[in-house]
Length: 141
Length: 141
DNA sequence: TGACAAACGATAATTATTATCGTTTAATAG
DNA sequence: CTATTAAACGATAATAATTATCGTTTGTCA
View (cartoon, each protein chain N blue to C red):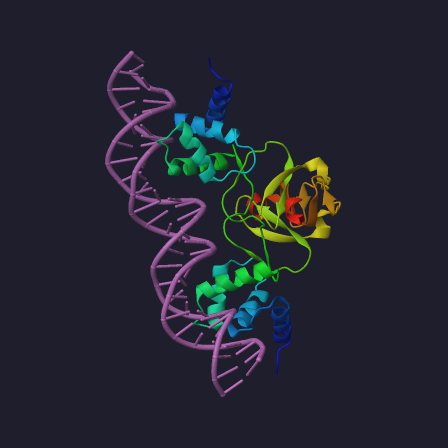
């Protein structure tokens, strides 16, 4: 009996020109079973239960591959290294997916968010940080 | 002649219980002159022009101190390590400043952003990533 | 001014991630 | 169905970013 996850992953790989390996297949399945925002290490620990011989490097390599192919997305578009915010005014960020540049944009220029103090679940809102993700003028050619 | 930056920094330190050292003072001044989103290393390179003997560790220690005191802010509330987004639906994030947890919230629950295709400067919008920053129910006590 | 805690500089340690390389495996042509 | 070959694997070294350690120096406050 074939599970119906396999064919869809096989298709996904075909669409992106990736070879279908056992490791990749199980990696993908394991991640699907981890809702939320797992780190590569967390994925690795889970994956080892199904493929004890798997390497952490393989996990990193394939997660990067999935991200670069657009099969998966990162939680933060700029998680790389610490950046200090030196713009004192209320503003948000334009993040270019190609050149990775971050530029500032006035809150007024993109429209205000409807502000609420409390959200469902009792979360107390302090501020909104909005990343507008797309292509900057330069990178559109 | 005293520059009027010094007294305000002195006050800032007093408010947050920090000692006023020469290194800290110049670090702060240098960062103020770097609009945008400098990295610790970029700050270090600039700062060395004014205090050649300064250590990179001192830069890191004091930036962290400033961040923890709330004197400065980070560009991204979750820059730490790579996180994979496994929630397929359109959603945004509630980021707790205390426990660092990231939970998902439906786009509908926080109100829609006014969507535009193009922004001033020719930026081509692909999607919005919104972080609602504040305190989760747990951390409010 | 002098004592003491805090901050400094140098550098070791840690963590996250990527690169290298010899071996194994999947794709596919015959 | 098997042989060829490029791609992927596992182990591990290398790199980059950040934090910890520790002996010395400096700011704070009595």
